[in-house]
Length: 285
Image (tube, rainbow, N blue to C red; front, side, top):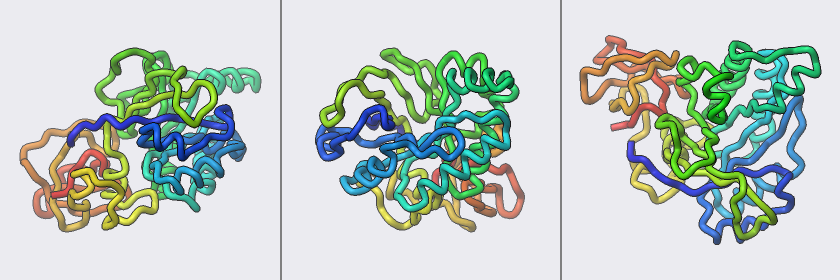
C-alpha cells in the first residue's frame, strides 16, 4: 500500500461556526469531526459540520469522546455514534476517544480506569462499530499508548496517534495529530492538524464499509482504481496481522478470498484457510 500524506483537521463545537468553503480552499483534504461525547450527547456543531463537509466535498471521519465507566457503556457510546452518523457520508474511520478527562470523570464516579479497563473499553466500542459495518479506530497519545492501552492487543484496530513533534514516533499510525495550535483559513483560533498516512476513502470503499459502494469512485487517486475485495477474488497481504491482532506468516504473493463479512476477510489458498484479516490490511488484485 502506497503511503499518503493527506492534510486534515479535527474539530468540535469548540471551533465555533466554521466556514467550510474557506477550509476546503485552504487545502484541507479531510476532517475528523466530534460526533458526540458520553451518553448520547451530540456535539453542538456536529450536524452543521458534517452537512457542510458533505456539501463542499471534504471527506470526513468522526470521533466520540468517551465517558464510559465500563465496557457496556463504551459499546452503548458506539451505538449512539453510529445512529448519529447514519444519515451522512463518512469516508474516514469512526474513532473511540478516551483521554485524561475520561479518567478524571470515572474517578469522580468511584471507578478507576486502568490499562485493562481502558483496553476493554476500546475493544467494546470498536467491535460494535465494526458490527455496524463501519471502519473502527482508536485515538491515543504517547502517554496512553505506553501506560493505558495494550497496543499489541489493540493492533487489529487502526490508530489515530497524537504526538506533537516534527515527525511521528510510531510506524503503525493511520492518522497523526501533530499539533493543537494550527491555523486554517475559515476557522477562528487554533485547530488540531492531522496527517493521514493511509488513503482511507479508498480502503473503506474497497471493503464496502461505512455504507459506501465498492464501485463508486471517491477520489482521483490510483488506489481508488484497485479492485474490490470480494469472495472468490484475489488479494495481496499488506500487513500480516490476523483479525484477532496476532501476526501470521505469508508464503505467497497472493491469496484467494474465501469469505468477506464486513471488515473481516478470510483468506487462503483454494479452500484452505490461512487467516482472517482486516480488509484494510489487504489489497484487491
